[in-house]
Length: 320
Image (tube, rainbow, N blue to C red; front, side):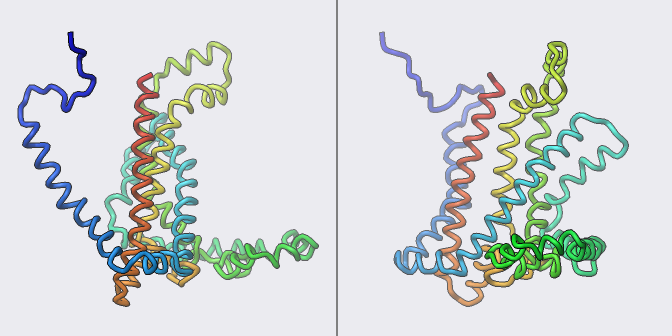
């Protein structure tokens, strides 16, 4: 008796048409996604490996990668904690204006990114409603006796000569020259703004579906609130939280519109990789632009594979 096959090309369906729908789907994805992206590799390969390496890993390109990935990492990490907190509040509590706050989370999805960038630059600019008092507070903090004593100590003198302290000074993040707009901090603010919905909307449904009996059972066994959260609830939410983090990070590294207004766009300081691609195109350096684009494309592809793996792990864990 032959063994039943363990691989099935398609699930049984009442409605026919798998072959036709599958063919149309593959053709559509090839025309819209696969062929245009493959042209990047074709265009890059025309210049040879040496030209690709020189363009993709020049000093200016490496500086843009550090700024792009570093700011994206910080923004995603910030949203990992505060996005989880927002999702928890929206899922677990009822309060006046809850639906308004819930709708407000989706504003970065609906707004053109340029509008978000202009709004952030206006708010966090040197004379902005948030930027002016924040700058004044940090500068007064730098003038305080405690900070002055630390700066004049042996440790403070050593720190002032380090590369990190020099980076903070040149980036506008020191006490005396602090600013949000036109600095790396402004890039982090913009990327935090656009990546927040990805964390909240990924975690919120999982929190809403948590069984309240688990918390009651843990409390009846003598577990404290913190223990219940750490040992019972967090392991169930963690896969979705990790997926939201990866989605937010992937979205942030490709952001352009909301960043160019608030960043200042100074090479080696506040120039992100998408802006460098535009700059190369304006200089008619198409091979250089496509080389940087290929690096960003490969990075995004690896992130998407990681996100799919995390989602599969999350489904298996929740199913178990």
